[in-house]
Image (cartoon, rainbow, N blue to C red; front, side):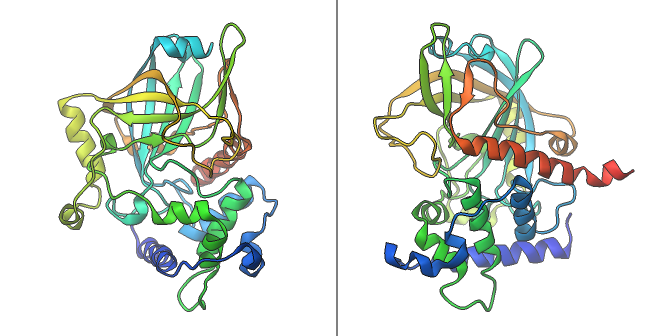
Length: 348
């Protein structure tokens, strides 16, 4: 999809977000009504949501509606003893193969890896269970989410798409961000471009319910922490970075040694919101070690592989359940995007 339309859409989208960040203004609760429809909840379907993403980032063809650019790798997950006591889930009791996709943000497949809007980066996982089934996990490199519900998330993208050149200030996006502090934090506090996909921490912003063999229930959110530590490019390195440097760096790194991440579960404290992914839990909350994720190689023909992969965050084994309504919404939206990137093939 390397064409002028994509490049124009990328430039427009980036300009919108940069303009909004520079013109964010404070709004009190009494002025939230002036934010218009973008600040109000609205019932929308998963199809409506994907329509909005396609409208924002350009017509979808063979790529995802969002996190369109990525690379697929493989490896294994080895659980810890504490994972075994937390849940009856099979991959908490047995070492299992994993398929992982690292990705850049936005639905623009030609976006340079070092662009500000390539963050947060994604890490989606398939754990291949001993009985032949699988369970999936979708995470990104920002500890939090810009919206509490699928409706709010759609309104965020509607605001982006309504704030183009020539729109008077404050724009719909200015108003949405001022009325939604989590979205403002999401837009304005992203980390710099990373040295590698292997030097980022990834967060599962949705909460899950875990049940062990004794029936004990634990709630938590996943964290994936790089054993190599977190490392980011300098300003000079960002200016010189190749458009696809993250994939090239990953191939070079894996040719020398596996990549390892600590897999953890963050536990809530009293008063923490279980069902609202836009509210981040404190870094002081206790975490439980779940084991180690080891990435060993880039899969052959990664482009074909990533197009065919569908990660469903609600595909869960016995012993793990959804504890956040947004998981169900995401679980229904992703197949809509999957069908659209396969539409041309289906017609043949």
